[in-house]
Length: 312
Image (tube, rainbow, N blue to C red):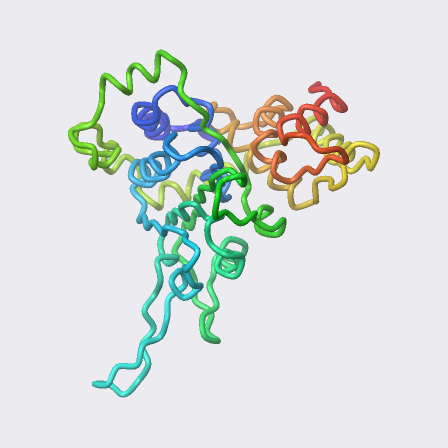
């Protein structure tokens, strides 16, 4: 099993040049893509959620579409619709923005649940059923969704079934003082300029889509020995302890946690996963799935789980 290539390391470096001061979220986003999952980014507006999504798509040389989720967005606006053409006398299907390799669902929780549900089949089965016909989605297919905090006006909480479709949920947070100073000094050519303006472009053509598919296949072959699986099973069992948690981690969450740990090991250039890889990705994979019996933050729930099962 070859280690992570120079090209992949260059992609990670390029993303860190664009999203300053956030190496851990950048690494987790890359691991989510390599694990063939989907990513939810939850944070305040203006901290770089959309920038990360756009930069990742460009650096990996993938087709990219963005949908701004709003209260009046309809499922057909995402999936596509059939339009009657008088010339041919037939209906012709016009694909929606979901038929792309990287879909940015921006502010997904500002759309009503019916529109949010348009993504469920696509995220799970990599296909979309529209007007009685099932259509395959491009390969790879990666959804990056951003959502604003639920206390903001006009937001709708994502149902558990949709949250579970996201392999990882991450936060970016505010930059530290040094990083924020660098951002202010760097500035942008104009207030309306893209965060990926020509002065700071993502390196072009570093990765071809077929190369990404090869990496994803290699990630699935990363070795996980018995000690890693024992630690993972211990976490799953502890999460189902009704004394602490109202909802534990499902078998699908366990498989996702293992995929994410393998991807994290791959980024480190190893052909084997360790319990530390599990621990490193656990907050992003389990935080939006755990439900404590008493109200507490997802971060505290994950910390409680790790206290129950210390890393070997």
